[in-house]
Length: 415
Picture 1 (cartoon, one colour):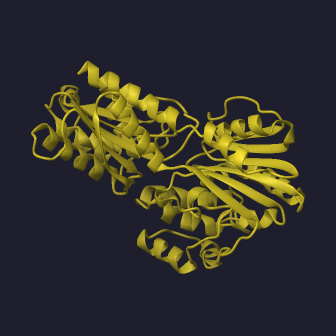
Picture 2: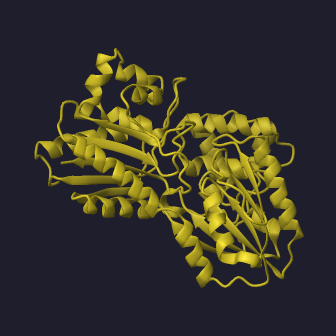
């Protein structure tokens, strides 16, 4: 069992290192020749890492820059760049103050300037200027409703962008006639530009009617003013932006596949678009693991069975956790008693939900270890308290903020 645990930690390290945006940003700037005075704005959980790479590549050509990232994700000062940290997954006052600085910078730019816009997941909470009359508390309350509802990220951002001055293509309009070169690190299934960080520099493909359907589907409570803004259409055409996507969940799964081979496992990629309740995904992966151990499927041991995507959690309890932790814990019962089997689920950004863990790991002993401590897995899951359940059995993955953000990967390892 020690071998498979060691392989897991090596695989996690390899996956994260392979998906750092540093080389991709540097390569993009080599191919795309920025002209004139270059300004920089970077938003999201990977904002500091992307800005660091750009600053190194541009050197003295960079006039001024702004970074907005999650608390604890900045790694030091950068030349000519002001760095702000703010709230995530729920925005706070610093999100709005930092975004106002970005708006000021955009308003200063003219047609001879170029703006390098570095976007990564988490930007929806970190980059925000509420629509006229909408308060910070309004946005916070609605965000909390959305996060608890079980809505997916496309649905969540469909609502967010209509209550904002910068989302849904509106920031690109504010910056015109300045040309924008956007480098995107995708954390959205299908790499939808209008959903990554709520698409501040992308035309919006969704409509007001689509947004209203989301409100009805999840029975969201909105103020009259919020409903009014929801009916205002977002920009459908933007002409001053060129965009490049540099990473996504597909590259995350490819890295897992490559690492598995290096460690002596035959890799199988099940999907790169896993999108369901986290606990359902955990139960499915555990059933696949059990069948693999008993030789009832086509997977040949030793193997690594890989699934990428973004699951959701419908909050019904008041515990602590994240979607990757809930997925891992829900898999524990299905692999109980099996030898040389392990399931882990990892958020590539290093922070799964509002916790300090990146995800969770369970093996054939996890379920029994929970029972020995008097812990009921069903009660833990009912309270959405996967963090403390996994913590009790040493099943948390702790990487700290990684500097990247390309969605989640879940892996079954069978030796």
